[in-house]
Amino acid sequence: MKPIIFSLILAFAASTVFAQTDTIKTRHTDGADADTIIIIKSKKGRKLKFGFGNDATQVNINTTTSDTTYTASKQPGFSMGLTFTRFDIGLTTLNDNGSFTLQPQNQFLNYRSWRSASVGFDVLQISYRFNSSFRIYTSGGFDWLTLRLRNNGTIQRDGDVLTFVPDNIQYTKNRLRASYLRVPIAFDFRTHDDADGRRFHFVGGLDMGLLLGSSFTQESKENGNQMRTGDYHFTKFRYGPFVRIGYGGIGVFAKYYVNDMFDDSPAQKGLRQFSFGMSVGW
Image 1 (spheres, rainbow, N blue to C red):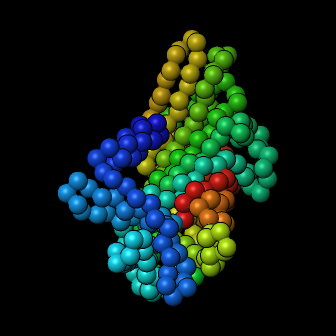
Image 2: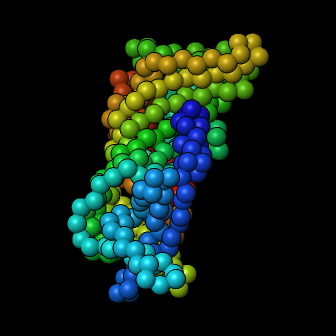
């Protein structure tokens, strides 16, 4: 997770060093909604356009006056491209057969609620816009699940079932993690701009995920830092409904995966993941 974040920071820093960036609030001459677009001007004079939150399909530049007017067209149709949006950071909660209290066989997964996280973002998007207010889209991105365990002990990797071996070591970190490729299919409705130039978004759909990898990390005085990657029985494919509600560029999200969190481990049958938190970018 940390190398990915550092890479994104370096990429952003490089773009500011080698390019001139202008941020423009677009406006429509026909009274339609406006969008925020970033124009990056390279040293050779070429321009790259990135639309934040929505698919700004066309930019017309009028330089006949002293002020430059940028007009974004929102005609119906398909759009596709790279993006960095819907950055989610939230909490993860386990639902054990309809209860938020873990059953006895799952007590070894007792976790620190405020330190068990769900983090993700999208990097690719394909959408079809019906009109200025409604579109459907699918996207590709990454999602990380982290459980900070309370109990001292180790979850065995590559076991026949999910197995926890307790010990007397005091761990400052005892963390179970899984990473997923996330592919949502969403219905996105947005209102018209208000007096402040912002709008509400209401999004709902199906979130799907393909397992990329899992690991178990521990930190203690006795053993130092240890990270073990392998099979911890996380489900290879997860799916479930999600909703997003936002105003401007900030909102909230909630996801509930309807299939089991772990595969091939009968004692954990019915244990599912619920995540909620804040989201930036639309």
